Structure formats: structure tokens, C-alpha cells
Image (cartoon, rainbow, N blue to C red; front, top):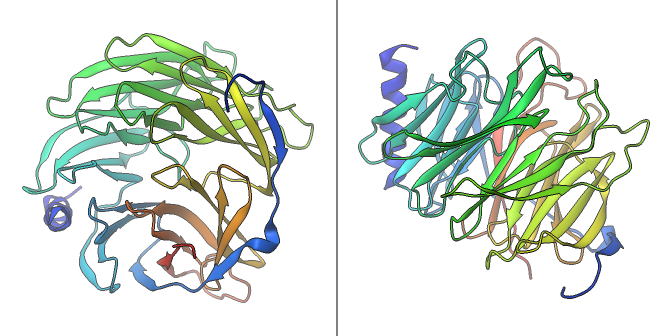
Length: 385
């Protein structure tokens, strides 16, 4: 990657700086008729190929959108472009205080690069191939491959490493890094299949990772692991309970979120339909399990307070849409549609939870001709009456 391309992204990143005592409750979520649709407040366009990752700045005033070939910084209120770069990224995440940015990219085939960048000065503090063996951190997109701890001290990565000696051909790996020094604090190897989801508890004491289930070769359920961040001690292994069905064998964790008080852990998994679970963190006990009446891919996001869950979808013969669900009741509360985004690759809530952004392209839009396609980001007001 040329120094000019790197410097461009460095410059515009600097601009961005400115239920108790009972068994689990089984519920069927519904409420489609209660959903409220909305029109996009702002539309961004200009990416050359796909939008794979979205990140709001800590104050919510800017959005950094990245794709395979370029990155863009936008004003989230006006839609005006602040800066553009030829440096692509697979995932970008701001620290809670806005001082640091984690950038996950693939500069070469089968090589991943994790960089921690100083947002104010625009320089990399350090960078590393997280698996140090020419392997990709993860082979999925639109998921939380990188996460900062709330205090900005740690950054966690999740993914997989190819290994022909294991029966499924690769294993999952989760790592914790010191943000200031780049020191690898903990590495958790040998997790089955892959670890595409990582998230810290609100107090930063615990790290949870969601693991892939059936990968098409071996029929196994996904699971959740929880570790103590300082000691590295594993606290829980939480197994998913879905039956692995013949036509929907992929039983895997798609996203995770802690409740604001850190006492509960929410998980979204998929096995044909989505299933939302709530666990008691201290005991690992399953409190509630709800089936969501919607198919689930990997493009999802929990609101920062974990009170809402956004699930994005898109189809060749339909508009792309984002549906929002109440994580307490399982009711669908909102729906946002786009007639020019037919494949959504990324979705994100603003830090205050009042806006939602989705990025994608019209590659499969019916009637589209030619080999080029439009990529864009749309932002909706998702405040509720």
C-alpha cells in the first residue's frame, strides 16, 4: 500500500477525533404490525466498490465507512463528504473516548493487518498480523471482528486459523491486545470453527466471544465463551440449544451484547430463523429464549444500551431493509427500507442510539445493467415516539 494512500486515511481519521430464580422463558416474538417505517435522513454515496464496515465517531458527528478499495469520512448530519481515501478496510472501530481507532484490513491474500491509530495525530501506534502466520483474522464480514474495552485499555480480535490437523480444517482464536504497547495479553486457541464476534462487558472485566457452529462440513452447535480479561481464566462455556435442522444447519452466534449493568449477556444466533437469548452473567444461566420471526444473516447490530437489535437484509428481487426489534419483548418496532441498496453489508447505531446507518450496494438490483454498481450509506432517525 502506498504511503500516499495511507497518509490520506491518516489525515481524515484525525478529523474524526474532533428474570430471577426461574428457568428460561421460551417466547415467540411477533408484532410485525407494530413496526414503523421511516425515510432516510441522509444518504452518502461515492464508494468505488461496496461498503463493508461502518463506525460512528464517539460524538456521533461523523461516520467512517470502509470497503475493500476505499474509505470515506462523512458528516453524519449533512451527508457532506469530509475526506476520501484509497485505503480500504474490512472493519473499523472507534474507542469510546474517540482517541483511538482500530483498523482491520487485508493488505495481501491470506494476510491480515490490525492497526491501532491515534485519531488526533493520525499515526499508527502499532500494527500486526494478529495470527502471525499469514492467516486471515476471520473469513466473515459485517460482524464484530474487533472490539475495544470501554476504558480503551484493551482491544480484542476474533477469527480463525487454518489447520489441517483438526477435523474441520480450521479452529477459532480470540486474542486480547494492550492498546498502547501492542503486547499480546492473552490468546485463546483451539475454539471450534471460528470466532467472528467479540465484545467486552461495560466494566471491561470480561470478554465474551461468539463461536461458529456448523460450517457445512461438521454438524455442531455454536457456543459462547466468557473470560476474565486480566487473568485470562475462562468463566463460562454457554452452549446454544437449537436443534440442528436438516435444511438450516448453520447454528452460530451472530452478535453479542451486555446489558448496561453488566449483569446479563444477550446473544443473537441463527438456525434458519433468528433466536435471541438472555443469560445471567454470574451463573451462566439461560433466562430467556425468543425466536424472532425473521431470517438472519451476519449483518446485525445491538443498540449501545442493548435495548434494541437491528437486523439487515437484502435480496435480489427486493429492497434492502433494516428491521429493529425490542430485545426485551421480541416485538418488531421499526423497519427502514431502501429502494437503491439491495445488498446490505454493514449496519451500526449511533452512540446515543438515536440514529441507525446501513451500508451496501445495488449489485443485485433488478434491471441493473453493466458491470459497475453504486455503493452508498443511508442514515435514519430511529427515535421512537
